[in-house]
Image (cartoon, rainbow, N blue to C red; front, top):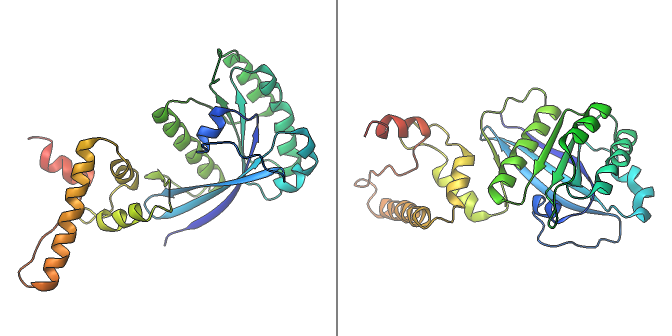
Length: 261
């Protein structure tokens, strides 16, 4: 039976271009209430949904008295700092202590973002000293290159799921962005099962193929969808004559059929 979770995550630390790209924000919205909201949904093993509601705290001092209320019910925290800004790194002491005081011993992930301008000045030794001081389990570094950012984000949310849901064993993982994309959901419905063995395809692989910008992938995707639609309409008019099995092969069936060819 599939599981569904909705989890609150506190997001704090310095504002930066790297932070906004990690959170998939194209621009900064100046909120007047001290907190803004975002959501990231993860699909585990093709069926279990973990939806993270991100509460991003405004780093301005005038809002800090409101943080204890904002942090209530937090299940994890993402704390950002700029690798080119020593003051943002020193501020982590405040953020870690505040999260611990207001939310208890929840998982905390430090995310160092590459400076938009200038050089990296925060040494790894400094970061590891901070981790040891507060007994933090993990730290990650995100960069502006899209593919690297995507991989780092997956690593971070896998880690959070494993820390929050101790019974979870992750075999297949995908961040569904945007989950609200009805065309992607329709694509999943059409091609979620291998046409040969009928096993579930990896959602992450289907997502990578669906959102690929490569011309050959786009052409192949359109051909697949057209074939499925044509087979469907033909089956309505000639149900006894149509016997097509169209789909995307799973990894095992693909290797079995093509690895030696």
